[in-house]
Length: 619
Image 1 (cartoon, rainbow, N blue to C red):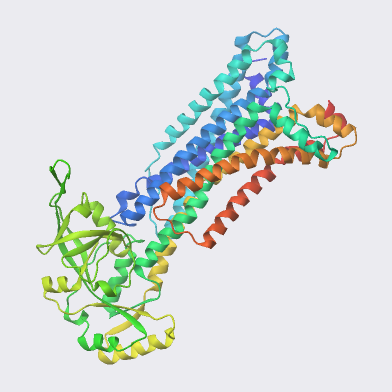
Image 2 (image 1 turned 90 degrees about the vertical axis):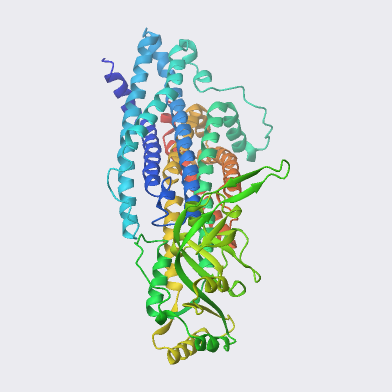
């Protein structure tokens, strides 16, 4: 028999085990490649897209998530490959003993099984690359359909040979040791089940009642098969950690980032402005989710400024809150800050004199309807020459923004806060409206934001507003901002939903690992379970015993993976997380679905084995 014919025939003879190994390796390679290609467009390079979509604060959260999930996907790949390399050789040790008994030398045996490893590694990695590229094209088409133009060019395809080579090398490196160890084993040991299944002396479980027989058999098998049990627990724990970060972290981050957008924009906010000003304001809000070029706009044109009569009319309505703003586009300059060391008295200068253009918004601090997530402080009633800047502006122009100042038309403002705000994609500067009016000489406002009291009739109040505004200036109107808010929320939700489903391929690979582990333990228990069947045990009894084994393994790995995943999510990945009761229930539901699906998958080998005739089991 040729050196290639034997490995191929051996792999084909074990179709089920070979398919498990190839599919699991394919999924690991595909998920890793897809994540890297996806991150090139959305994740690792997301901070470079500040000029287009997503402000710096949101970019940071996305980048951290994808980076950590990518690391976990790669670790899962290593663990899965290592586990299957172990299972692959454990199932062949007895065959090696028979081959040795026939007089085959060690080096030839090593060559045969290394050829099997090479074949499996190449096929699995090749299929993984194909499916990873297909998944990338599908995701790109999906993103383009919602307005996220990521492109289908050559960007990132240099990652293909790197991922292929890395996993191919890992499979060989992790598989060489089991192959070498198996090839060197003595013939007598190789033919002994106590050796090739790695069995140890069974523990003294004291289950005496008949009702506890199934539990005793299940626990004894786990204790005897310590090596495989330990490996599968570690493997599943890492996968459940990945699933928890992807599901729980994704849902928490989704609700948290949506809360940032909703509070910054405002829910059920009505905008009173000239129709042209409303269109411009909408473009500024949509910069968060759409790449668009800035269009020159004269914010201080006389026709866009609200009259005093209009503000007085609004002030007389007790059922509404009024937030009048003056919005301008102005040149700003970064002003260096000085940090003094209290112990030594030495000082350090941070920052430079970078110049740029920012959307400058004058607000009355006590009447602001926005509630930003920010670092530092917000503007107060007595704020004078103080500013709160957007997250993108802080990243682009400032070194340590809270230690520096910003110059607006040669007037210095101390930066007291950095806010996350979708308007103008985070390139915004908020200052007291009195200071902005003093600098520009523009005494009127061009945007009026109104919120109706919850106890009032919203529709009736809006109709009254529209009638009153039209009677004063027919070019002004009342506009609902919920549409642009929902558009930004939908965009951010689409991104998080994609990230949440990234671990699915690795999770399916874990299903296959459990199937392989159960098949291995059943093979070790074949005669024992066959005797039970011969003594009258029903097939359901066999399934029940295996179910108990699976539960012990799954609960151990599930508890560790979920616990560490929640801790990492809350303490590292999501700053100041927003966790609603509904979010907790949704997380629990998805994680229980993952646990149940893994458990059900693991029963397949037991059901398949239990249906066999007793004579076939005992053969």
